Amino acid sequence: MPTALEDLFHQSRKNNQAVLLGYIPAGFPTQKKAKKIIKAMIDGGIDAIEIGYPYSDPVMDGPVIQSASEEAINNGAGVDEVFELLQMSVELGIPSVVMSYWSPIEKYGVSKFASEIAKKGGSGVITPDLTFEESNVWRSEAARNSINRIYVVAPSSGEARLIKVTSECSGFIYAASLMGVTGARSAVSANAKQLVERIRRVSDKPIAVGLGVSTKEQAREVATFADGVIVGSAFIKIVQEFGAGRKGLKRIKQLAKSLSEGVRSAR
Image 1 (cartoon, rainbow, N blue to C red):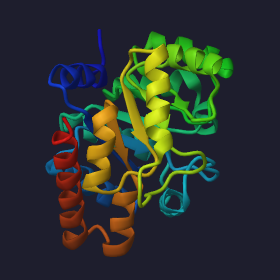
Image 2: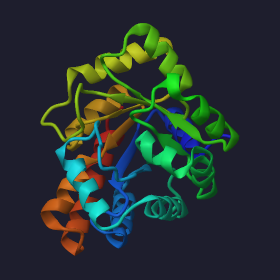
Image 3: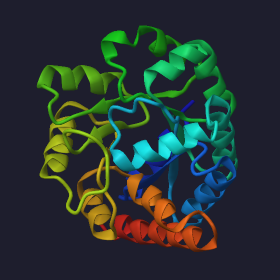
């Protein structure tokens, strides 16, 4: 049976639209506030939620997400908060996934982690630093629990590697539009479109672009060529600047609405 995420991408393709995904680390700035942030994102028009597992060595994340993760860890956020937030997001009727580096999954227990994701109604897991060569255990546990395995593809991936990695993905293929770390940018990298075109030549699975989108215009641009647009740092910056009280939540909802309008008007 397809996951809620697969259903969402299938429906969006039928409607000739891209999907808008919003990212927030669990426990940021507190667990209680993270719940309100997710609600504000959804009220603003986000289609799917990506929950970050706060990790002390996030090699793929830029300074904004790194500092949010640090804050969450200092607040005591860990695996329980990740699963609690996942369940809450799913209960709001939104396809939801977890993004986690491999070390915390291994530490928790691969089988137990996959089973817990499924139990909470999560669609799958994005594993940015897990290579397909080291995926045997994860592959079988994800399959056993019918959850999506989402890998990250970078512009540096050669053709042969692209074919292998994309064949391992389910749910969607995460296209990292820039070399280096995540973070809001002033312009969408030309790499993004080129990478999506390269992936299209070897796979017909949905492709979502992450790393750098922060404005309505950028969201519209990415949505003209990708199946999904992932936004994280831009939401976190709002919380860092305005907090997650009434003022911050209002701005989060406004940004989600603006990004959503950008995505909807792209085609």
